[in-house]
Structure formats: C-alpha cells, structure tokens
Amino acid sequence: MRASGPEGVPDTLNAEYYGQRASEGGLIITEATNISPQGKGFPQTPGIFSDQQQAGWKRVVNAVHQKGGAIYLQLWHTGRISHRSHHPETPSVAPSAIRPAGEALDANFTPQPFATPAALELSAIPAVIEEYREAARRAKAAGFDGVELHAANGFLIDQFLQDRTNRRTDEYGGSVANRMRFMCEALAALREVYAAGEIGVRLSPFGKLGDIGDSNPLALFTDVVAWLSEQQIGYLHLVEPRANTGLNEEQDMTQPASVAALLRPYFDGTIIASGGFTRDSANALIAAGNADAVAFGRAFIANPDLPYRLSVNAPLNAWDRSTFYAGDARGYTDYPTLPPSPMLDVQGPPPWLAILADEASLQGVVLKAPVHGKTAILEILKAAIPLYDFQRFTYRDYVNERFFMESYRASVDGVAVECAVWVHIDEQGQADSLMIHHHPLPAALYFSQRMWLQVEEKYRELYLSPEEYAALTHG
Image (cartoon, rainbow, N blue to C red; front, side):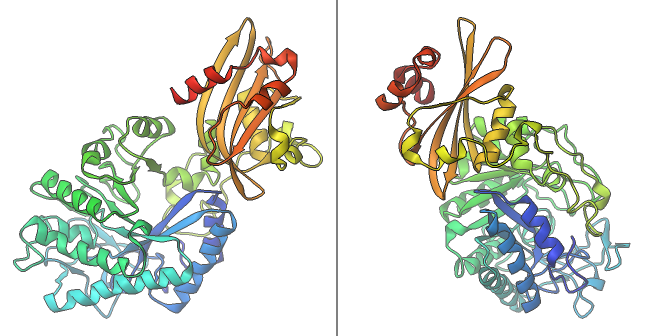
C-alpha cells in the first residue's frame, strides 16, 4: 500500500520495490488493485481504472520484465469492506445490505465502524462486470503477463459466494450455482482479454476475514473449485484459513495447512498455496502433491532476494509489520539482500563463466575451485549464471572421498539448459574441484561417453557411472 496519493497511481518507488523482487523465471502476483473508485476499501492502494494508473503500472511491469520475471495483476473489489471516505460520491456495495462486524480504515488511516452497504441492484451488476473487463484491458495494455481474480478474503466476489453475506432471492443468490454466478461472469469478462491459461483465481475457503462465512463451506468450495478446473485457468491460488485477524495482527500459525490438500482432488491444474508457509512446510506441501507452488507475502516483503535465500536455505530478514500498509521507502525498499560472499570478491567474472558460454566445451570439465562447502559452491554458481528450479541433491561417500551433485536449470546466453554440477570434497570437508556438465533442454541429464572419457583419470572413480546416475535421477 504505497500508491501515490488518493489517486492510487503506482510511482517510481513501487517500480523499485517490484524490480528488487523480480528474478529470472519467477512469478510475482501484485498487491490487490482496485478495479473502480467504488471498489476501493483501503488508503494508498493502487487502481487500474485510469490512464495515470495504467502508466504507473507499466513502469512496474517494465522493471520486472527487465529482470526476466513475470507479473500478474490482482484485480480487486472490496465490496462492503470499505469506508465512504474512499468513494464519497457512492456508497459501498455488496450482494445484500448486511453490515460487517469490525472497523474500516478511512482515507486518513483512522479506524471507523463499518456502514451498512447498499445491496447491488440487479440492473447494476453488469456495470461492475464491465469494470472487471476494463481493468483487464488496462492490465493488458500495461504489459501484465496475466491477471488474478481476487475472489477471497471476504471481499466482493467472496461476499457473493458465501451465504452469510449473500441473502439474495434472485439469480445471484440462493443455490450454490446462483451464488457462483457473479464470479463466473467476472471470469468470463477477463477471458475476453486474456487466455484462460493467463488467468489465476484466488480463493480463501473456510477463512473468516471480513466477517465472512457459509453454512456449508465444503459443499460450496468443492463446487467452486471443480467448476474452475473445468475452465482450465492458469492456476488456483488457495489461501489457508490462518489469516482471520486484522491487518496489524499476526496469523495463527498453529493450524495445519489443510485447504490445498482438501481441494486438490477437485482441481486438475496448477495450485498455488499461500498463508504463513515456511521453506520446510512449503516443500512438504509440494512433495505431498497437494500444491504445485507456494506464494510468500510477508517474507518476500522483508527479503527482496527470497527465491535465492530459499534455494540455499539462508537465514531470512525479520519483517516489520508496522510498515506493511503505509509509509515511504522504510520497510519497503530498504530491506537488505544477502551480502556478497568474500569468496566471490574476485576481479572479473568467475573463471568458468567463459566455459559455460561455450556449450561444446562443457562435455566433462573439472575446474579447481578454492571454496568450502555446498553453500559456497551454490553462491559461486549464482554469481556465474542465473539459477532457478533447483531439483535434486545427492551425497555419496567413496572410501573417505566425498562429493555432492546439484541438478538445476540455467540460462546461458539466453539459451535454456540443464546442468549437473559435481563437487569433490576432501576429508576436511573442503571442496577442491568442480565439474560441470550440461545439455540444451530438453535433453536428459546423462553422462555422455565423451564426458566420461574426458574426466581426469584420478577423478573417475569418484563419480557415478551412467547407470548409477540414471537410477538416482530417474528411479
């Protein structure tokens, strides 16, 4: 929430923030972005309904694309979770005129009691759907790779879905199918601009944020998720029900992550989970097959280089919640990245960078590397080429001779390749050699005969045979 002024225009500070967090092959989902003046519910939040906002977002998109990342715009209408000061000319709207419990933040960041919203007239609903369509058009014009439909956390679409907030008796209320209708129409509007595979949908089943709830949430959300699966959207973004408190309160981390596991059988596409995950819990969720990716919010705010920190299991900066929702650069663009390793403080590029750029010379290379331990090797590789998608780790012991292997994907002069890195470690735990092997994608990572013959004789016995390697990586 750092948009410039009440107009909600992203500025250079926002571009710097998103650019800091962009990385090769990474996906950033933006903060929630208002599709209309009436959809605004919080101060200093950005919009995507004016030319100035569109131009501001284009700067953000360019900053992310320059780092090789992708970025989706999250489209948002807060519905009844708002205050009249954000849109003085019009009241807050909702499916039904039911006042939520709790307080809103007015335009001056002052807590105020929620007001009873106006129930959306049947004749007014098409205009709101058109606002979603126009927001998607502007997102496309700004260069966004896709959009995410915010249907979670007690905001407008969630208010239509759940019967605690939807008491309508027309075609937008009553049955689950009717309560889904508003979401279905909003998604259809987005699909007029973006392909289905370029659209994500965010849901928060069983969440209580925004005084939301349903008499039968399991039946509701299994139907919603199954229908979204049929639409072949790009991904389903599921929020675990831990964020049931206010903006300035921490989540309840004692609850197990259950929503993704519960709804996985109903969705055939990509699931992104979010809501208080750590590196270990995220990896466990993915390993169990209950999600394909995990989104990080607070940790990413505090760690601009979060993907790299997670890849090498480095410590994370602590976040400052008091700076999350307003302010300037403090607590926004001033979080530190990992300091350079002293082992990387060399003149010029690492000695094997030139070799990496020459695919033909990579068929079995042993390089001397004065580095110590697995983390240091990975730091050096990070300095040499953009790394992403860390896949495997293997450790073997051959009569006091040890090595480890990392298989990863990389980009060499803009060409995607798969690499296998083998590091020999002596009895003192010091890495004294580095062997790199790669093939252009999509070739499999096998030791070629040519590579095997080129490896120095004294090192051959330290490495796996082609059969052992194939068994480890494909068994």
